[in-house]
Length: 203
Ligand code: GRF
Picture 1 (tube, helix red, strand yellow):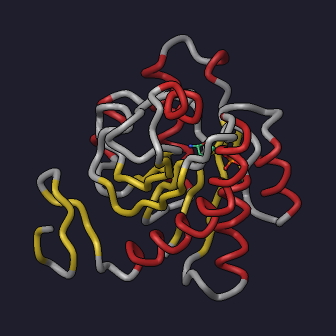
Picture 2 (tube, rainbow, N blue to C red):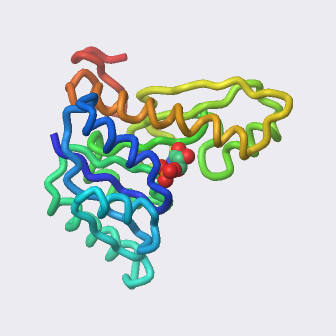
């Protein structure tokens, strides 16, 4: 199976997926990495790894529709089976999402459905919550609201800050994302009628 990874920044989740492929833990090929930011460290990482890359900056397009049409064409050029959002910081429009429904997943640093959107670590602290985590989910038109495929949980300690939470969570994201992709690529899990099916049965 072929993957296209979309990212905007650091690219540590991309790197974890790439390493899982290299180590034989994920039977897939990263066909391309696409960024919406030319300066994204993840783009440089991909280039250094010899992976095909593309960069589409939103500011070069007159409208979101034109940007997303170009993104669709770019992605299609890599002929992926799945699109993997890994720190892609742009909200995608409904036509784009529906075109790729069931074929696009994202990792989000919260225990979804809690804390959709940004600044999740601080919001967990502000809410006085005792547990935090990350979730991998199918992307559907409503931001961070698609069916959850997998989660990892950490306890929130009295001394935790947004930074320590992020630092403790990230290595767990790096395990969760490739492991979840492996489930998908084995066709054990799929999205049908907005519900997750496992081994052909609705969850
Ligand atoms: C991660 O925290 C991920 O959960 C969120 O964006 C961050 C991306 O980090 N969606 P990286 O670019 O993969 O290092």
